Length: 318
Image (tube, rainbow, N blue to C red; front, side):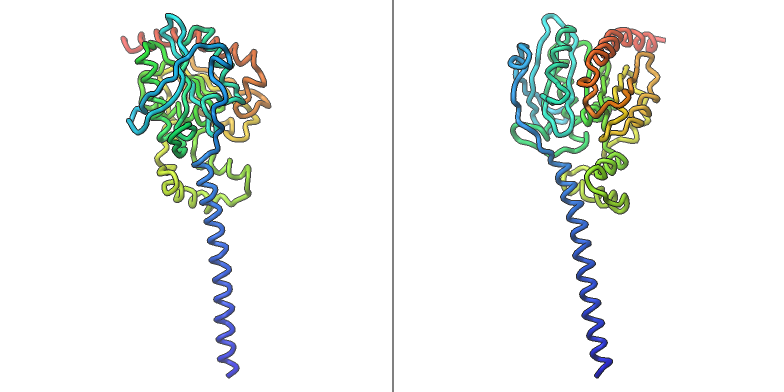
């Protein structure tokens, strides 16, 4: 009788232990699912202004298709009289085309004073209507290519993409497949890869690297239709782009560690490519923190874009 009671007791204890284990395992998985869902569905503020109200710039509301035809995009086109040069702004994650903390209107006004047409648009995760999930550049790169096509249709002969954070990482992905970009300015480049994903998760919660990364890699395709293996981060990090690129990055960037920008910049052989790693500057706040030097470097870089195009033409003719 005693042994039978002991057996029953052991079964009860084992059942309780298994219940506790599966409960905590479920909570662990649910936590990762919540994180993946939040990352795929960023909260984005509505548009508060427009180029005319903010800076007195005349503009047009524009609609254009993503290059793959998956959706229509909404944005603004700010014309510069007689200009065949266009800057396409590529905003960051969790923001819309205004990206007030940059601040984007100031840079759009600056670009316009340099006689550039300007395209500002919302990625689908920031859309005012028919909002979509964020995919780390998979869908967004097609949307950026659609904005580049719009610039071409409006007569642009020189196109510069000016990207911020994930918008810069998206620009690098688009740069792998387009021949229509003449230069890129990339501020606080964020490239979604396992290392940066885990780095950002650790900023908010102390989870183990393994199996957290493996769980997230399994969850992303379910929640936003995009696996990390579908983002060409390895190819981007190894790419020597044919057009000049200016990398701007702060050493106190807590979202995109600056060694990534240093690695990307080191791969570039275009003589007009450049980088500025700013001591103690923060993610997407370099312009706010060093406005004069920021604009001086951007202006010098843009002044060389035409020379870079001539250099590329000469090299191809040889």
